[in-house]
Length: 199
Image (cartoon, rainbow, N blue to C red; front, side, top):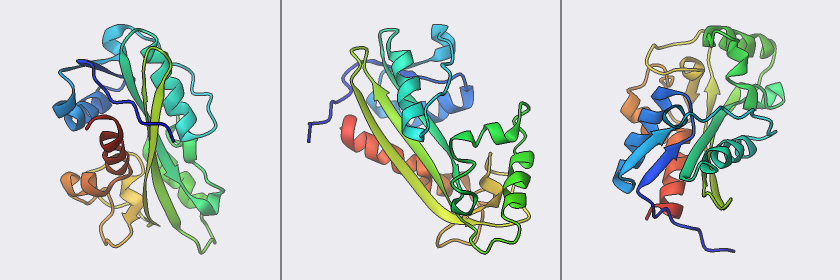
């Protein structure tokens, strides 16, 4: 097994056009980088997500941004529902339609589960760190739970109001954000990435 490459630069590019995601990732990695830039600031286009897995899409986005000359980090995440054959999976955001209305997406999931006994689901977060020379370090985090209906809570986003993590009674939509961040798929992935590349 090859030794992981460590992040040694000053600036980390967060390969997204989503300002909320830039803030969230910068907060998590602030101890390890002096400054953060986003695709928006660098004027980089959003690459087409043609990968068939979360990992492939995270790597594709990270590599596209790293070509601009900085080490870049990208994530790809979504909800996997085994009873729906793994959907919405990598298409989790697309299920919300052009207006990104996740009430539509949650209703689609619920309609798909009609008459099915298995309501298990898990969130996945793939994180990829790419260097300008093409080297990549990638990890994948998961959080397992069960889907409930009707959705509950206003605190989370996406599919959070219908997802109850294993061992808990509250949905991610009802849970205190700090508590959610301790156990989420993103927290799991960031723990692995920090361990691997930012020590």
